[in-house]
Structure formats: C-alpha cells, structure tokens
Length: 532
Image 1: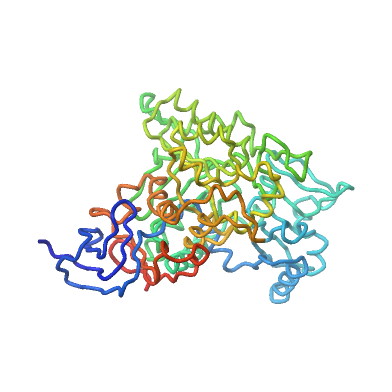
Image 2: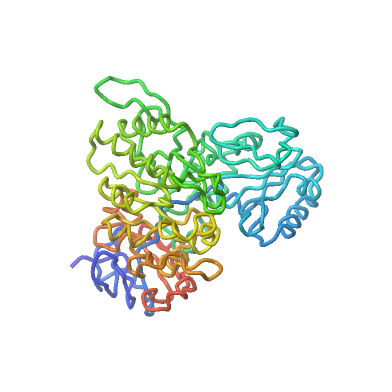
C-alpha cells in the first residue's frame, strides 16, 4: 500500500461524483485515496465537512479588487449615497477623481443626477458605477471634458441619457460608458495586480479554489489592453491565490493570417486561443456582449418591459456583426461565452451557435451563454439540444430580484434565472456570482439556489429551486465542466487535483436559510492549505 503525504481524517467527505467518505489521502497535488491509508502527516478534522473547492464560473476579479478601494455605494437612499461621495471628496485633492461602485436605482428610487453630484463634490471628477456594471453616472466636470455639458450625441449600442429639455443627466448606458472610462483607463498593471491580490485573499476565506474572470482586455469590462500581464505578474509574485481562467473580450481579437488549410483566421497573435496556459492560469472563452442589464432595462427582450411599455432594451452592436464575430471565433477554435440576458439576445446567441456548427462542425464545442437571464421554455430546450452551457446567477434573485420582478412583470418571472428547468432539460448547471454585481461567497450562492427569495422576502419562481446537493454540484463539478476542466477538478476523485474546502458544518444537514452562515475552516489548492 502506498504512503500518502497527507491524510485528512475524521471528516464528512462529500465527493460530489460518488459515495461520501470519511477521509482524503493526498500525495503531491493529487488525491490518491478516499480512505485512511498510511501517511507522513495526519490531520484530524474533528468531524468537519470536506467538499470540493468552490469554483465561481463567472465573476470579475480585477473589478472586484478595485471596488475594495472605491466608494461603497451599496446604500439605501440618495442621501446616503451623496453623503458617501461628499465624505470622499473632503479627503481628496481638488481636481482628483472620485470613483464609486455598486449603486442600484431600484433601491434608491432613481439614478443619481449630475447636479446632485456637483453640489457635494465641486471641483472633483465624479464617476459612479451601477451595480450591474452596464451604466454609470458622471458629474458636470466630466461632462465638460466629454463635450456633453449641454447636449447629448448618439453612441451606437449605448445611450447618453437626457432630461425632457435634452440636457444630459450624467447617466451613460452601455457603450456610452466608454466616453467616461476612456478618461481613467487603462489602469496600470501594478494597480490591477494589487486588485487581483486583494480579491484572491478574500476568495480563499470563502473556500474558493477556482474562478473564471469574465472579460479582460477590452469592451466596457476591460481595465487595460494588456490586462493579462497583471494576472501573469500576480502569479509570478505569488499574488494570484486561486486557479484562474481568463475570458478575452471580443474587442481584443482580430483577423489573423496563416496557411489557408489551418482555418485559424481570427483570434490573438500567434494563434493563441482557449486552453492556452496550465492548471493555474489559462485562457478561457472569447467573451462577447450581446445585450445589457435587466434591472437597467437595457437587456434585449422580445416584448417590452412591464414598467416601461415603450422599451425593449437593445443589442450592443448590429446583429449581423455580432453573428459574424461568433462565427469567426468558432471557426478558429475558440470556446465562446455570449453575454445574453434578454430573450431576444438569447435568440441571437442560439442562432449564431447553430449556424457556426452547421458551417464548421466541432464536437463538444461547449459554447456558453452567460446569465441566460430571461429564457423562454423553447429556448431552454433548444439550448440543451445544441449542447450549450447556461451560466445563470441565483444570487441575483436574492439581491436584485425585486427589481427584476418589476422589470419583467409576473408573467415572465418564471423565465428568469432558471435552475431546475435547466437540469430537467439535461443541461449541466454551473455555479457563479457575477461578483461584484452581487455578493460572491459560494455558500451565499448555494443558499440562494435552494431558497430563491428576494431581498423583500418574496418567493421568486420557487419551482426553479434545486436541492443542496445539486447546488453544491453546480458550484464544483458543474463549473469545472463549463471550463472544460471536469477531468482535473470539481470533485473529490482519485487522480484529480487536491482542491478542497473544509466547512464547519454539513451544508446538507443545516436549515436551507442557514447555509451561508457555515464557517469556512480551511481552503486547499493542489494539496496545500492556502487558508486556515
């Protein structure tokens, strides 16, 4: 019998893909047994629960890390928001930038207005980011820089919002955000490296061992054209604390030249594409934004918003251009992750994926639809037939579900951020947060998958609830599958990487509304405890 380097014993081990066990034996970075075998070191876990390391399939690491140094706008009133801006203005040099994040007009009653910001931050540049990331508000000083102080201008795929007199209010939606972002971007690589470091330390405390960074290098989500360098620097400096997969925004890809028989005409220089890298840092899918935000009323719907009967949202670009980008990326070997929240955007994604496979058949392309937010029943079945991986965020229901209900109306709530119907259709369900849009702790996410109640306590399509074990599987093996890593991580299986989380209680035994209260005791990546 072989001798393990480390034996974790006296534990409740939930393997996810097999029978529960009571011990885990590890050698190097791999699991070698799920029973008590001789080991050089033995740790008695005193009855704690061991689960596979949590894997967030869609989040924003640099964005989240940056918010930890920005003005926290997760407040309940306009007065509190303005007080937070005023407090930061009092500490900052005149003429500096005041950047805040996390406000939600569904809670505040309306978006902040440029005049309000001028009153509390005179002499400063103010940029406040919406909780969704799909819009922002700026003050008059910024509007002056942009030439938008008196009147708006057209922005394809976005909007400079005006009042009844045609005067810009300071609200910039979707692609119009670029106007303001271009004044502060790009961030220095070292600033991004520090943000990645801050974020990763928090992830370890929450039991996270793997993440997908859902968009770098361009678009409104990117922080620098050379953003990948920050992740590489973080790894070299031991500041990249969890396994990380990087989605590359479509804006960063470009036509390539090579031999005609290679069929690689679109991507990154040298033909680098999905899968490049190793077990700790690798390239994932191409990320393409098809539409916007549901609570911001910019997601593309086939029917008008319930509270705005003259609006259906809109696509980020001309649909023919979006389709052409998806086709070119598919033909060149990329996995694709299409941001599609509204059912009109989901139609576009499914049509493009089907056309891509007709033109360039690829087995198990495993293309994704990020959010899959408002999905009609026919779209669920079509996505399943196409082998698409949907990536919804159950935590949206808990934090912004009341706003989503107002936007959709009662008749479409059952279509929103589905869970059970996706499993019933035979699809693999990942677990994800979209942090920092909402809180990102996986135990919070699992609780939300099981309970589906809004912040006001209202049930939100309770027929879409799933079991605790199904939710745990989503946040582990389901997310690994979405990243094409299910053969390496996602379950406690002999031969897989020793990525695991030790919990202070059995999440399958506590009350559903107490799951988020379970303490994370230890987090292990590759056979080494990174947090205890």
